[in-house]
Image (cartoon, rainbow, N blue to C red):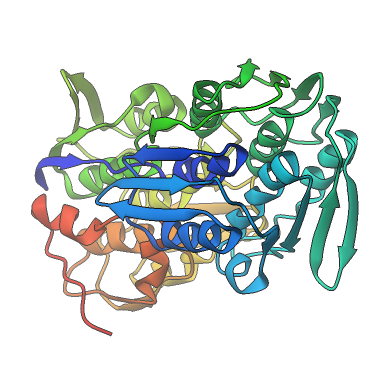
Length: 406
């Protein structure tokens, strides 16, 4: 693989930013919004709630003057669990919200109990009724909230709720992901008072009102990481526009340990592998540790290492479903609980495989790029939830990849 590729806006940053527009009347303008299925779902949900949503390329314009509904229905929440992020903004803006319980997902159960406990600490009355969370509060009040573990969605939901609460809120053991910082920066641009975002303790001083924002979504660090692994897998030499290494330190450190050159060159990041892939061990952790969203892609790379790699998954309990599909391509992987042992193989061979989730889709594509013969990957609708035109971008780098019609 050779050439230059542009990273799109981050889905995991764009979704909470879209829902943050519920916090203030006026016309909001978000740019660098990726064209993804989950983004389309978010737009539909905002429309149901009363927002007027327009899209022009990567620019979303949302008018939130008339929020006339407080309900996020099951039909949308079941397709995108991030829909639960409307709970905090609606509660803060209109004092009530009714949101379908999102349930679990293929990679593991992700309950929202920490979201609800935090909202109760802010003064909300929470009830569960026929699969819906109903929340009410005349005015939220600041509180000190300590999470049992760093929860990205919980940190985002409570941060959005607290910006309009009376008094000061402190979130302890908060998630530290770059997407949290992006949301905080956007809220500050709306008039919020937030400090400590990106650390374990976030302080929010409530304000009486906010105004509309114009904001550019941060680039997608997971998309950038996926291109890096693809270049490493194929012995390529590529340049990536909008890859922010400061957001990817743990991952880039492991990539370099595996024998891949990663260097900043002006406005781009160059990724090159000229020697063998070294087998190394990784353990997923909340940020700033190795991201769980890069575990599947890195496992594909380790199938071509020079020995044995041990991969420990500590974030989600069911995130090894791609292993069976990698084995169909000839990978030698053994699972024992939350640990996968990957032994290098001489080569992979194409076969029909099935994507089981978003990042598993990317791992299978990476493996297929280095496999002999042709690999056919089904259920690629998962891919469209988190990667914008991935096959087109990889093709521009020299990959032999095509999307077949359904």
